[in-house]
Length: 257
Ligand code: DAK
Image 1 (cartoon, rainbow, N blue to C red):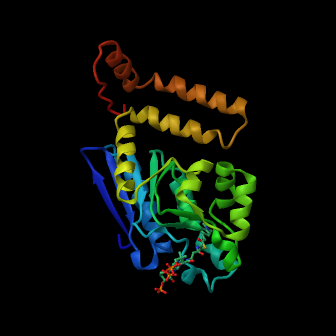
Image 2: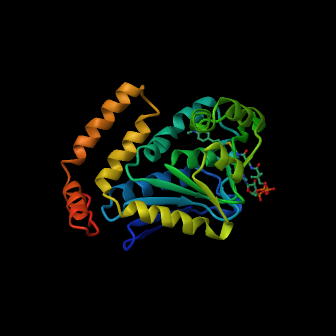
């Protein structure tokens, strides 16, 4: 891996992926995205890992797709690059993913953060979809996820003007989970990931799937999906362990089975 660093932490069951093209503000070139896709696939299959954090560095989470790499491309070049298989892999990751964002999260960087399940931001974080300023528009879910998160009026303004949103505003608008001082954002993300990693991995996977389903279905169908997943929890050893531990007044030991 050249452009990302992966650190699984066996003790906490949390894995950290750090985007690592600091000079280019972690611009998401094709190689970086390929590495990210492969790392996520591997971590998703690793039974020791129960939650994943994606981060950048203090100055930038990611300033977008690599404009220098895209500049000379035609529509057919873009089509043939089939970047969506990479983005789809991120979206289909079964384990909870937290984006720990400091500095710029722009264009594809903002879209990457929004593709994650939760966002912890430092007070210096800036979110934006500035593609309009370089003659294009969001292409990796920005018009959809941003609108669902903050509503039409605010999303429309950001997408049509390219203006950035501060971390405080993003928290107020419901785009992110919370803002913390810059020296604490990664620690806070680990705290949240660690908390989730103590839960039943089976229940966490089914719950994540169910919450995500609410974006894609009407209420009736969503409730039906939720019920199926709820019943499925009862097929797990973790359900027996969790409920027995409650009755026996002890801490459960979940195994993901
Ligand atoms: N691409 C390539 N290089 C970038 C970059 C980017 N997005 N952002 C920054 N850099 C590079 C700069 O060129 C500079 O490199 P050198 O000149 O030193 O070689 C270095 O990073 C430092 O940047 P600056 O010197 O510009 O730093 P400043 O602090 O002055 O400004 C900035 C920071 C973030 C405001 C500025 O760099 C900036 O505006 N960057 C571009 C932001 C942007 O427009 N982002 C959206 C890009 S379009 C898709 C998936 C995704 C996408 C599309 C399709 N499919 C699946 C189909 C996504 C598209 C985009 O994200």
